[in-house]
Length: 232
Image 1: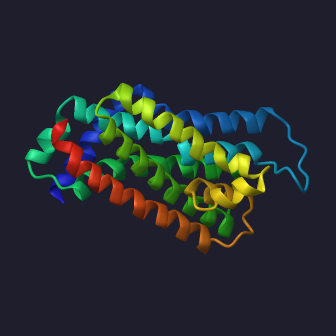
Image 2: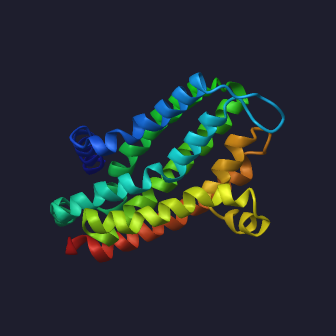
């Protein structure tokens, strides 16, 4: 527990030294607010008045933090921080909870801001925040996997960016292509997109799919941590 808290605190301090990461938690809700206020949308059965909120929230949860998380981890590796932590006996789950936990908390705060901009209440707010937080967890872990596998920030960006684009934009393509829609059903980003665009959808299945994604990504993180961590 002490190791997890120390890593959590370290990441909190590091984020304020890294504007490129910090801005990710600000720019998406800021754009959603600006577009919502200044771009009039004729609300009808096909277009919601909160279109920009749900759009930017989906992008933020689905792909916004993948590259940021990979950059943070690769920086720990290139700076030898991860090597020292492993030598000191820090376990994969402690590093995951400490680092990922901080960014998940920051992402949860941003999700609440999105919710306030959208004015969601009651069950709609519960569904929105549930898929946002669980989706963010999947994105953060995915980014951390790439960060460990890459070993440096340039390689991390090269690996994580294409995947972030694919998982982030596949749900949009799925709306126009039935085949892609069937394939996208296994992705956590598709489940985020389903809920934030239709609060009448049952919450259980999307959360189960996202949870399955998280389980697979956690397993990949542990494997990558054990195999690559000491080589940083």
